[in-house]
Structure formats: structure tokens, C-alpha cells
Image 1: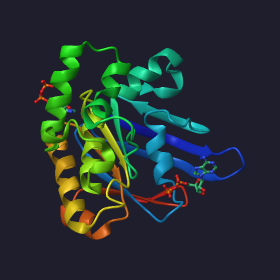
Image 2 (image 1 turned 180 degrees about the horizontal axis):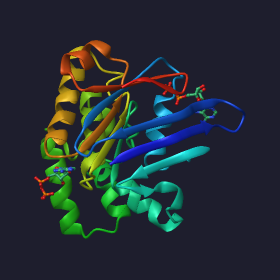
Image 3 (image 1 turned 90 degrees about the vertical axis):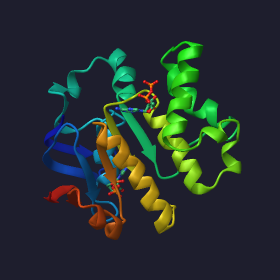
Image 4 (image 1 turned 180 degrees about the vertical axis):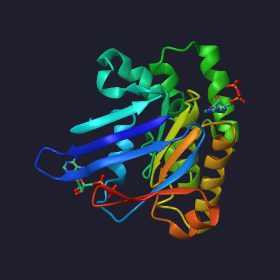
Length: 218
Ligand code: ADP
Ligand code: ADP
């Protein structure tokens, strides 16, 4: 489903974030990406929805080389890859419903469809009763749930999350991971970068371990 072939990434300015990365993530897999700070975890994730482009090698999704994707197809790719960030990146001046609706509005969906899908996504993360709330009135764990609802509202086959529990205590982190497991169990390929080794080990999924831009193991 996601294949990296000899992928190198050099940022302007010289930092070599990834070096000759070869790996494959199967459809429906749940995997964690680990490694020290600066190992290339964020860069690895950002190549999947083409937020960055590789300097060398190829990234393929469902067998298609992203290097050959025409510019007008990028929005379509990004709807197929739900993204979750540590700082959740919600819009503070819009309520929960409007934040979750955003990807559907951008995709040009109709009002009834948007209402139905947003409520279904909020129901999945247990926040249906908060649809009118502003993000600042929510707890950190609730804000992250809204971020997850926004990421899944277009029903993407792939979810990527960059340190999604980085700001949360252990109990909330575990709840957030259980949500990812629920989406994974209905077939969503899920890739999570995390530092939370004790939580990752307790869950027992495959780990892709990066060091200095290379695959150390996994
Ligand atoms: P991680 O997520 O494992 O901490 P990153 O992918 O963020 O690793 O970073 C890998 C390397 O690339 C680091 O040396 C980092 O400083 C560098 N880097 C990341 N983003 C940029 C950027 N936009 N411009 C220049 N260098 C970057
Ligand atoms: P609906 O078909 O009305 O959207 P579902 O109960 O099937 O209702 O899904 C509810 C919401 O849960 C979806 O809108 C989506 O946000 C999320 N969801 C469910 N299944 C998936 C999936 N396979 N991939 C991604 N998101 C999903």
C-alpha cells in the first residue's frame, strides 16, 4: 500500500533527513515509527501526502509513483490520507462542527452529506455532544479527538499521525491509541510516529525504527 524505494530527502540548507530508505507498509497494517529526535520520522510521514517530495528514490501508494502525480491530483491524494498532528491544528475561531467539516467543504460536498458525515465522525470519537463548542473550551484530549474526527471525516484509507499523544498524560494517550486501533480494525492503514515506547510496547504492533535518516530495523 505504501512503498518507499531508495528514498532520500535533503532539505534546502543541507540537512539530510532520510537516506536510502526502503520499506513497505501493507494494506490494513498498523505501524509505529520510532527513533530519536531528528531521525526523520516527521519527514517520512510528510512524504506520504506529498507535503514534502523526495530528493531521491520513489514513494508509491497502491503501486502508483507519487513522483508522477499531476498537481491537480494532489488534493485528491490528501483526502485519502488523514493527518493528525501533536498540536492538533484546530481553528480557534470555529466550533467543533465547523473544524471537522472543513475537509468536506474543501471537497465540495453538499450540506446534508456534510452534516451526516461530521456527526458520524464526532460520534466515533465520542464528542457528538460538543459540536457547538469552541476548541479552547475543550480539554487537550478532547481537542485531539476533534483532530482525529477531522482526519477521518473523508473516510481516508490511510491515517498518519505525528506524535499524537505528545501532549497527553498516559491514560489519555492510551484512549487516543484505542481510537486509532478502532479505525485500523475497520481496515484503515495507520502509521503513527511516537516517542511513547512503553505504550507502543504494550500494544505490540510492528515498529519502524529510524536512526539518522536510515531504517535501523523494522
Ligand atoms: P524527527 O521527526 O524524527 O524528529 P524530522 O524529520 O523532523 O525528524 O527531521 C529530520 C532532520 O531533518 C533533522 O535534522 C531536521 O533538523 C531536518 N529538517 C526537518 N525539517 C526541515 C526543514 N523544513 N528544513 C530543513 N531541515 C529540516
Ligand atoms: P457513514 O457511512 O454515514 O459515513 P459510518 O458509521 O460508516 O457512517 O462512518 C462514520 C464516520 O466514521 C465516517 O464519516 C468517518 O468519519 C469514520 N469512518 C468510518 N469508517 C471509516 C473508514 N473505514 N475509514 C475512515 N474513516 C471511517
